Length: 109
Image 1 (cartoon, rainbow, N blue to C red):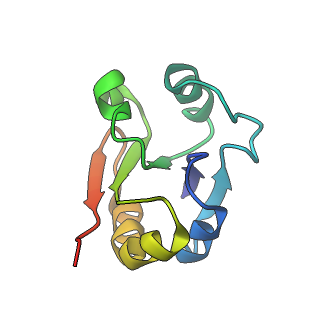
Image 2: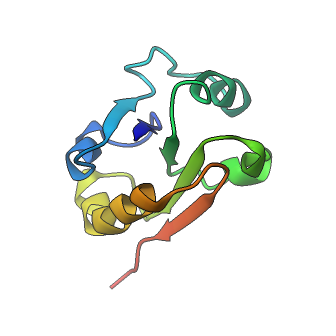
């Protein structure tokens, strides 16, 4: 599966998505592009998009797109925090369907 990581996520998250072809928004040259335009760019190229931008799903009609979305909720976007939910992220990506939105929430201990 071709996966795109949003620019606000650490590149090291790629290590937790084995067997997937993962790129980042900056690697694609799309840093700073707003969500609507970004959706148009990513849709023909990627199968899934992972973001920590919880507002995106309310600002865009994501279910009408052919890619799936994984939306993370965490206290910060550091790899130390996100690696704790990495198994859930991988499971979500592995089972993601076009237009599906999966939310993964960090459980505070």
